[in-house]
View 1: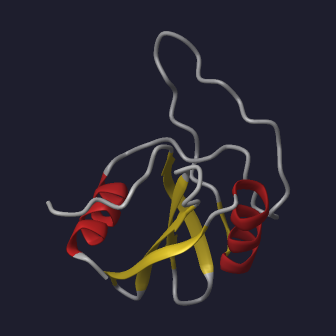
View 2: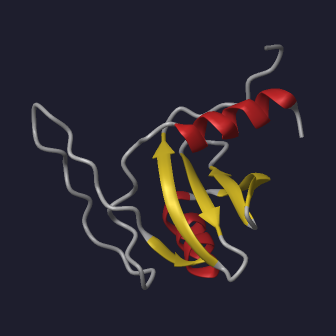
Amino acid sequence: MSKPLALLAAAAFCIAIPARADIMVDGSETAPTAPSAPQQQLRPTICASYEAHARYLATRYGESPLFSGLAGDGITLQVFVNRATGSWTALLVRADGLSCVTSMGENGRQDVGL
């Protein structure tokens, strides 16, 4: 894995961005809610089985795993990306298979030559 991609994944892990509110614990979907103006409100982190998240991200957003790295204490950071649209989602995955959306965004790209 290239160093620029690893830096992108590390940045995704560290930035406090609201989680997707349309992914429910059971993998079902709700209508996304818009943040209230002028101050954006943080949404709760959504946790579910890794399989449910992977299936939902592939079906709903066309995202697939692009990066995985050990974050410590048996937790893996995994970044799902849709290479065509640039949408991305970062998950923290525990050894027991529980995963939580930590951040998401748009306009993702693989930087080269940093």
